[in-house]
Image (cartoon, rainbow, N blue to C red; front, side, top):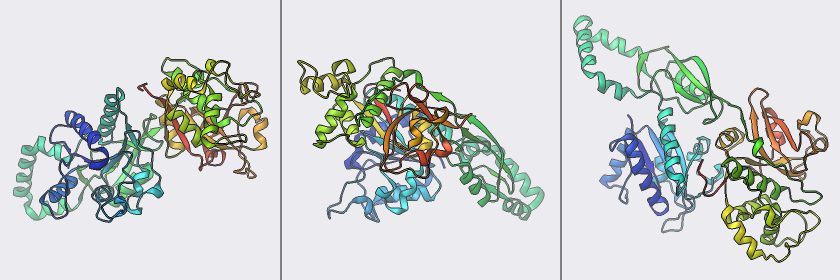
Length: 474
């Protein structure tokens, strides 16, 4: 059982899925990738073919476009909510069968939440998501996806091994049958089990999967990498589908966090006495993303703030983080020199119009994507993407001891701020972030919080967001 099955919605991502299909065929062969090329109706012969191909595959790629969640049928029902929706059934079947399931966002699609999905496929949100971007980044992203599939398939399949050594296997079976008789062979076979695919699972889940079939986890080694979340199995010494004796120990390799630090690319902002922390965090992350790719340009947080307030029709102070993201995606941000920040003065620069500044901002648009949780932050940082987060601010933030933020039980969701996460040290298990209170605060404008305290320091409702700039490939 070895094949890549591409699941997609024809009215949403037919073009992207087709291009992905072509590239994956080059990597895995014409027979190693399957995608339906015609409409499928219930009861059609082709539906049977689709089911068979899904059963024969070990990997399912769910291609998620901008309308994947919202497309409706002729009755006006959202397709995902219909029990016999083919896309839903493909994903549900793959999840139940233990396939390697990789959701892939295309066309700038937003990350869905678990509540957006029917209960029987919500496990999709627990999988590591990938993104395949358009333009010059497409080839690079598909290469990353291909590499990921190969790694998580471990070292091949039983079917491939059998095809290679089928003559030797036949000879051995003949000897066994002659020497021991069929009953002895049957008994021996009864004491052997097939190794499941556990690469791509957490260590806890992989251990449970092995135990369920009469095997056990053997030696567990670690490999420092941020391509996977910490404690994920990235390799199994015994390939999936191999036949082994009951009780065999399967050695596993799990991902361990690797230090990453983007501090040198970051300029700390100072919002003064104005509530522009959301715009400051976004401008900080966007500017750092440019610097990481050799284009050091400081972008205007005053523009992001003013444009966001204009979009909200706000007359008071402050703006929503999601509005700032909208402006960063839709308009971008001009260089700081075009509209320098002065918290006392919100007027346009002399002889400049908002239209002028919109034109100056256009080359600097951001791609901002929601991360599934704090464990996904490392992967984003490793790819050169700073991460914006909402945080719960307490009085302890005024003068944090040793620049370390310690959560308080008295923290209120009413006291929120926005920060830019830029580093992680696995030795101390601490994240490092840039604040927007100037360089006199904490450690030259930076502070730290423990991975163990992340749930209390960060605010779930505001989320975690990776930032990269359009036109730049990782």
